[in-house]
Amino acid sequence: MNKKLKSLDILKGIGIIMIIIVHNRHFILKNTDGYRALINYGQMGCQLFFLVSGMSLCYSWFHQLTKAPATNFFKSYIRFIIRRYLRLAPGFLIMLAVNFILNVILIDIFHYSPGFIMKRTPAAILTNIFFIHGLFPEYINNVFPGGWYIGTAFILYLLFPFLVVLFQRLYRVNRHCIYVLPPLFLAANILLLRYIAEASHGTLYLSNNSFLYYFFTNQLPCFMMGIMLYFQQQPDIGRGFAIRCPLIMTVALFAVTSLIALKLYMLPEEIPYLYAVLPSIAGLSFYWLAVSMIHVELKSFGKKNVKKAPDDKVLSLFADFLAKCGRISYGMYLTHSLVCWYGIKAVTSALTGSGYEYNDLIFYMLVLIPTIFITYVLGQCMEALLSRLNRNVQAFPFFRGG
Image (cartoon, rainbow, N blue to C red; front, top):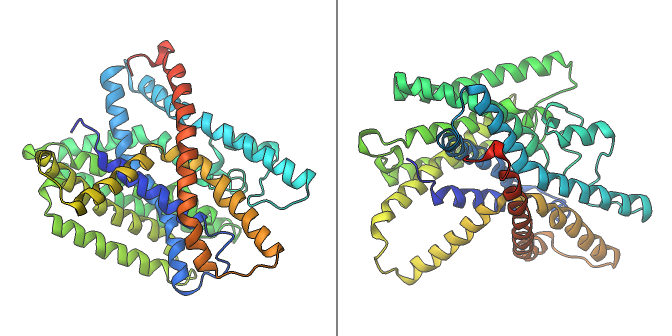
């Protein structure tokens, strides 16, 4: 399977909107009891991104090997990692500087508490600049809004070439062997997190939005499911895995695993190792969503000239919008903090400061669509800037042909 699928862009679009859904409630939904807590499930958009990243990176890796073959694995590895860093770093550094400036102006000059209070020590900033903050509990998520994702993702990128070679070798032995890797690494992750928690004597513990929750091994099984899906889509017996799976079965599996993930998410956090398992269960639900969407996309290839009903046109427009969000999802991720943290905090502070009272859920629903639209526009601007910078980088001889 050489062609990159539109389904992956749609999945990324769903992921970034899920992230906006959860981050947009920070300064609105003070009470998250009952059904309001379901909004917080939007945080699992990160697991959707890890899954899609695992699959998408396979395209990049094998494309690089085809267009810019290296004499050895080490050279391919270095080229791959540098390209990943240079894809992520410019936008991240721009928004890091923006957050720094906003914090200085709002906190130091106007003595106003902004939506995001940045840790501004040299060590904190340097670990984030080099994307190693995923290894430091004190810097993983307090320098950049939602920055834990980049810190964890980049460590997974460092591991990716080794993982894809492992998948390749097992696939050559027997294509079914690759199925054991995600559950095997999940079991290893639970044991590792238990050891880290005990060795830290209570300093580190596993709960939602904790360092151990963000830790790369906790997200690794989800990432590996994306790599697994890439290999499953290889043309065995003339067709890939998704097209051979009955759609009704994959949709049912998506529904069941999603309900399980939601049920687990609503349980008390005190349950041991709940958040060591939940990311992988959520990742499994997104895996079946991806299989379902790939099935539909591949089936539709032969039906391009069929006249669409009005309902199909609406669905197609919505899918196109999600795909556009997916293509600029990194730009939206970088810029959404300006709206979700700084903007919403300013609006709610102005309302409460003026004595206005509002129903938090109604207000949340009213501002959600404008937030998505503004973030979409900002994301387009950011991606346009990053594309220009990326073209300049690709002009260097080191990257030509890749």
